[in-house]
Structures are given as structure tokens and as C-alpha cells.
Image 1 (cartoon, helix red, strand yellow):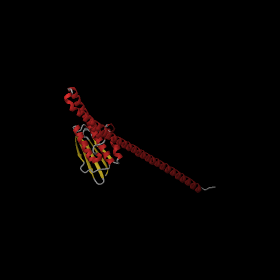
Image 2 (cartoon, helix red, strand yellow):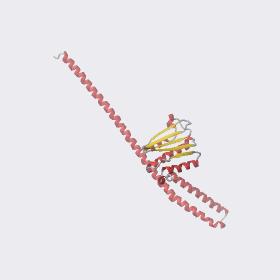
Image 3 (cartoon, helix red, strand yellow):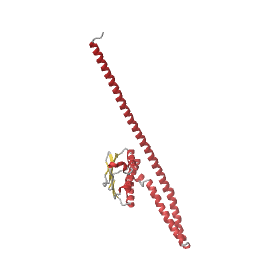
Image 4 (cartoon, one colour):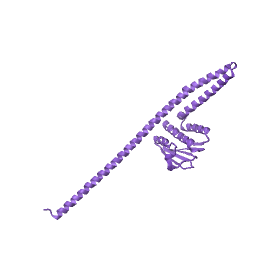
Length: 260
């Protein structure tokens, strides 16, 4: 018959065993939850990378199509319109034997053709930034800023003196980002001044974009209607970092940082 000491030992051993089993079970549950969270994070990361890859592919396809259409407009339609303009211009040789109405028709046709040629050039340049591939981002931005200033009441101060040539895809991405920011300013900000500053070092590139428009409340970011999600996606695509600050009546400041 077991003694009282033996019973205490059995109870103590049983209790200790139960604690050990409970601890092992708790450890298993915690480890399992951590593994689930880790796997979920990996899945989300993979989804994010996959979505970014899809977005990159879509952007590349869109830019390729823009490039093709731009060149078709310039090389084929633009050339055909120029030839038509030349042929209409040659009708002036017989001006002595044509009526006033016919002369007016010829003059009007030449003006219409000239206007169409200019529109084709404008659309072609909008689809494929003028001079970007040949002369680089700084040159293309200067052309863009001049065009915006001539078509609006906005003055743009571009400081890109330290900017050198970058990889073609990066230059195109930065051009589209700044183009979108300028478009947002034109559409929503009611601004009359914009500044674009490039700060270039050995390790990184910082771009600061500011306008003096009406700004927006950062607490109502989802209601801002500025289309910044598209810009954020493009910045992520080039492994950059985007921050912005705005307040009602204080314009907006956007900072983009990326490795040089």
C-alpha cells in the first residue's frame, strides 16, 4: 500500500507533467500562430510583388503602344498631311483663273491642314515625351514646363542642374510621375506657381515638387481626388519612397527619394 509520501510524489509528478503538457501545447499554438502570420505576410508580400509586376507589365505595354502610335502619327499621318499641304499650296499657281470662293476654300483648307498637322505633333509629343530618349529627362522636362507655362497661368521653376542621364525606363517613369503631378496641379490646385527640385548625390536622388495651390486636408486623404495612387504605384515600381504634405490653403509638397 503506497505511503502518503508516495501519493504526494505521484500528485506532484502528475501536476508537473500536466504543466509540461500545457506548456508544450501553448508553445505549439503560439508557434503555429506565428507560422500562420509569417505565411500570411509572405503571401501578402508575394501578392504585392505580383500586383506590382502586373502593373509594371501594364505600364510597359502601354508605353510601347504609345511609342508605336506616336511614331505612326509622326511618320505616316504627319507626312501625309504635309504632302497634302504642299499639294493644296500648289493650287495658288492658277489663282488668276479661280473664283473668290475657290480661293477662300483653298486658304481655309490650308489653315485646317496646318491646324491638323500641329495637333498631330502635339498628340505625338504627349504620347512620347519630346527629346526624352535622345536628350534625357532634364531636356524633356524643360520642354514640358515651357508647354505648360505657355498654355496656362502657372510659372514653373525647374532646378535640375545636377541631373545626369539615367536608365531609360527610370527617366520615363520619373517623367510620367512629374507629368501627373503637374496635371493634378492644373486640374485641382488653382495654383500659379510650381517648383521642381532635383537633389542628386552619389547614393540617392531626391525630387521635391511643390505648388502654392489650395491644398487639401490630410485627414481626408481618400477624398482628395488627386489621383495620387497612380503616382504611388509608379514610385513603388522604381523602388522609390514617396511622402507628401498638404494643408488647406497651403498647397502641396511631394518628396520622392530613390537610389542613384
